[in-house]
Length: 385
Ligand code: FAD
Image 1: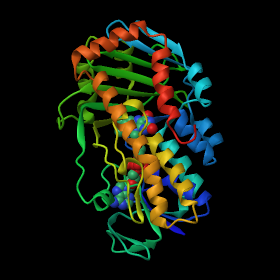
Image 2: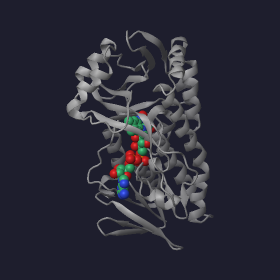
Image 3: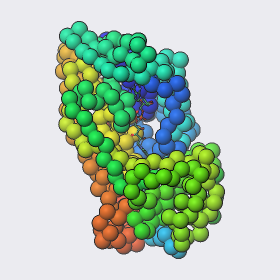
Image 4: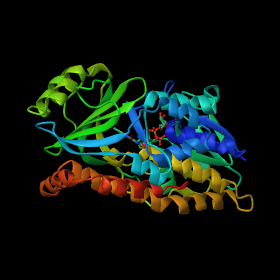
């Protein structure tokens, strides 16, 4: 059996590795010549870590991961601790630790595991078609590829998605802008082994350790879509939005490099219930685009890859039946993740200011039990728990 995989990002690369490990022949076609991930880093939660372990990457992943021993929320004006608690109960409950990693390093690990030289770069799929014998992808350079099945891991702007669903799926602006990047760890900003988040005014500033003595930082600000802001205005924009915030936040703004800081308008897509059509399956952001508010988009793509490879093992079923089985196993889970993230997004970013205020007050009473219980529930919904 031969699978054509469209997209060499987290989802496409994990699918390629998973299918290859199950003895399925794979070809990966990636639109760009050099993959430049949109964000600086990513938190891989234990459900995702278990998937990467199962795909043979336990050791290299650990070498890339920061040590997130505790988690804390801080008041935006004074920097005083609202709550701080150990992550150990979460690790004990789910049997794996979270791994925050730099994205470029994650991407390199995935491509090296699959075999970078086997990925066909500069191949942007324009359209796909299938019949009783197989499926074909046509690329913008006029070339084509055929296989028994096609995995569309072509991201949130997927061109294959409309062919599977038969209708367009507009992206929904979530109402806030996220700036993210990497900066050398400075303990005057936050402890080196802690996920620290300053909250107030429906905004947040967060720091998470990754390997190499670096913090992954991000700033969130509720804003209209389409503002004329760029790298030139970045430091002044952040200084304005976070005027009056605590000293560590000002120190962070002074230390970041605008040239390597990303500005992203955050979107998701209303969940849909069809992930496959005949010999074609959607995977990763092509199948479920979420806001990053529970850090599960990439983890869900890793889960997709594991489940897909498992379903394809069923020799007694047709290709279409195997993909239907993948859809059945994934559709509820990914819808749940997208909607959970949307709910968290609204509370964090002040959609209903009273609700957000109540959340800030609840943080001051938080022992860790409630926050960790929510995370454990999400993690334990994964396929390897
Ligand atoms: P992508 O990473 O978008 O990859 C798609 C690939 O397909 C790209 O390489 C692209 O070039 C290629 N492609 C596109 N069109 C075509 C075409 N026509 N032909 C061929 N190739 C094509 N997730 C987490 O798990 N934890 C986090 O902490 C986290 N934080 C996030 C923070 C931010 C600010 C954002 C925006 C997202 C975050 N996510 C996080 C989500 C995560 O980044 C995505 O879910 C993940 O990257 C999806 O991987 P993918 O492979 O499906 O899509």
